[in-house]
Every structure is written in structure tokens, then in C-alpha cells.
Length: 534
Image (cartoon, rainbow, N blue to C red):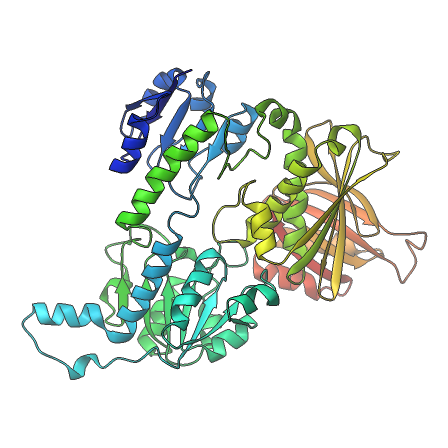
């Protein structure tokens, strides 16, 4: 069989050579086609290789009668409708590790440029000046580097910083002590990192918790004169607060490769500050990284077409596409249960126990476990997690996993159970499907309930007394936050007694701000409230 592959963006010469020498593949190049053009031609191809300029949406996929594989050269797959592709049995894959070294090296390059004023000195020389005293720098040796996010890239940054004689500390609530010890890094709380670090580098994933992590309040807790590097995500930083801190000297300097809005606005005050180093999102832009991206995506697309290997598959935990399509609703349920577990966990998860009950799930323990791990790791990693990498990432983070099959439950034809443990705590979740489609949580710890796992959810523990629903609803209404659905669970035969508590899953139509969450937590009858996003 000869596979037809469509290429929509430039690939490296090495990648093109791989395609030209493939005995079972031909390819066409149509650079950056419009959506109409893509819909028109996509039916002819078995695979498409894209970068960031092309969008594979539901409308395109509806015309993709023969499409089997979508290969994304690079990490981000936000330009692919993964759900629609999955329902059609189309494998979506990317190349998440291709730019790890390039990004880590760029982080160190930015750090060095910042502490030695290299861009400013270069500009001065080009203006025919010789101003040595003006560009007095600081050394990295014997200084403390604080890394926020100790994932794949953060770990590489740590190793390189240690070669400069730096003391490395890190904040990552989802990395345990064993992993940190292997990297020779001390894990600390965020406030301690801010107080101790001479330099801070951001290598964290973007989540609801990390958005604008660097803001006016957190900057105030930093060591005066700290220097900041961000090669991760622009919206980790409140740029207005950063500008103010750079002007006051609370932050001595910043090196930024990413920004809240890109390209950076012409009138951004960051452009005019003398103590800032700016690059236009160059962290992954090396010859080697681009070569690796191209050759990896071609190699993996060809392997997936041949059914040999599904490395970097975002949505394919099993090799047989027909099995995947059959399992898709349960895989989605498993991912959501894992995602909820990680967002509710109160420390680095060390152990996961999963149990599957029912004919439709008990024969597919491995892919469902992988789906659950993927859901757990998605909110806390700095690169997208896929079904191939999830078990390895879990192992890297020191998470042990056990799997069992249980007897069918009388109340549910098929049931997924997940028990996670961390130092000093644990949580049990159980989930099933409504109408073989809608993922639901049906038990959390001792609380029985039936709540949909979708969108924005407040998970709230409260006293089981009159008035709670009214108080919470009134507070949310005052902030114009609409409640889409409210499901409550009560625990044990003592439910309704003065000492009992209940738990609520409250689906919202919009996100509650940190201030609203603080107001909710201050209500006398509310014991704990956490916002999660699915």
C-alpha cells in the first residue's frame, strides 16, 4: 500500500529526505492552505503534517474520508480538534521532546545575558561607545537559582545551572522528594523560593493556578534585587506588575522570551526598560531543534501509518483504532477522573490504585489506566502528555500504580475507581457513564453523588445544616456567576446530624476569581472549597 501525505508547512531537508526515500509513501506540499482549500483537498490523503499555521477543525475532518494520522511538528496541538479526530479514529501525534534542550539552553543564555548586560553592552559598542563601568554585572557562581516547575525542561535547566556552581532550589507541588534528589535539587515552598532566590526561572505549565503567578503580591515576597527569566508561558507573569517592579528595583532585571500577547505590542513599556532582555519566542528556534521536529514528525507519521509505533500519540492508547473508538467514552471518563484527582490532591501524589468493574472496562485495564494517568499529569506538566509518555512521566515523578479488576457493581454496569495517596492524605473517586456518553463522578471518599465532569466546577465541603445552598448561591449571584448544576452528596447513616458534613460539585458558567473563592471559604458553614477546570 502507498500512503499519501499532505505537508502544509516547511520541513527540514532531512525530513524531506525521509519522505522521499520512504518506499510506501508519496507526498504533496501545499503551504499554508486556507480552511476552504484544506477542506477541498484533505479527502485525498492518509496523513497530514502541519505546524502552527494550519487548523484542523471539525469541518476539515468531516471531509477527511481517508485520513488516518495528523502529525503536528512541535508541541502544541491547540490547532487540532482532538475530540473530533478521536471520534473518527484518527491518530493525532506531536513531537514534545524535540525542543527540550533548545529551551533549556535558551533559558541559560537569557540568564547569562541578563546578569552580564550583554545586549545593552553590544548596543553601546555599535554606537561607538566604550562604557565598561556602565555595564557592571553579577556572577552566577555561588548564587541561588529558583526554578518554578521542575518538569522536563526545568530538570535540564537545573543540571546546567549546577555546572556554573549555583545552588538550585525548586518549587513544583507535583514532584516528590525522590525525583528532586536525583536532580540534586532542594524542593521548597513557593514563598521560600521567592525569599531565597537570587535568580528565578519560570518553567511551569500553564494552569488556572499558575496564570499570573508572578504578580504584585508575589513580587513583594521576592528577595529585593532578584532577576527573573521566563521562557515558558507569557501569562505566567502579570506584565504590568513586572514593569512596576523593574522600575522600582524590586526586580533588578528580567529576561523574557514569551509574552501575554504575541507579538509583543509596539507600545509595550517592556521595550523601553533598560534592565530587560527581550527575544521574540526563540527558545525552540535552533537548527537542531527544527531538524529534530521535522525528522521526528515524519518518522512518527510513517510508523503510525504502518501500524508499527504510536510514539507521541496524543489520543491513541491502543494500536487498534476500532478498539479505541469503542473505548473512547471510557477513556474520556478515566482522563477526567485522573484530572480531578490531581487538581484536588493536597501534595505530590505517590501512589495510584485503580479498579475496573464491568464487562466493557475490565478487559481494557492497561489503556484505561494510561488514560487516567494522562488525565492526572495534564494539569501539572510543562508539555502535553500523551498515552505513550504518561506511564513514563508518572514513573519519573515517583508515582507507583497498581491495577485490579473487581466484581461488577449492582448499581452500575461499568465502574472506574481511583484511589490516590500522598504524604498525609488520600482520596477515593469513582466514576461511570450516563447513557454511555456523559462522564460522571458517582462517589468521592464516603460521599455518594452523581455529578457531571465537565467545565468549571467548585468542589465544596460544608456543614450539613440549613442555609448553605442559599448562602453560596447568593454570594455567587452577587458576583454574577451563574450556577449550571449543583449536585450534593451526603455520607453515612449520620447524615443530617449537627456534626455531619456534605460535599458539593457545583458546575459554573464562568470562572470564580481568587477573591470569590476566598469569600466562599470565609463562610461559616463552608469547610473547604476548590475550583477545578476540566
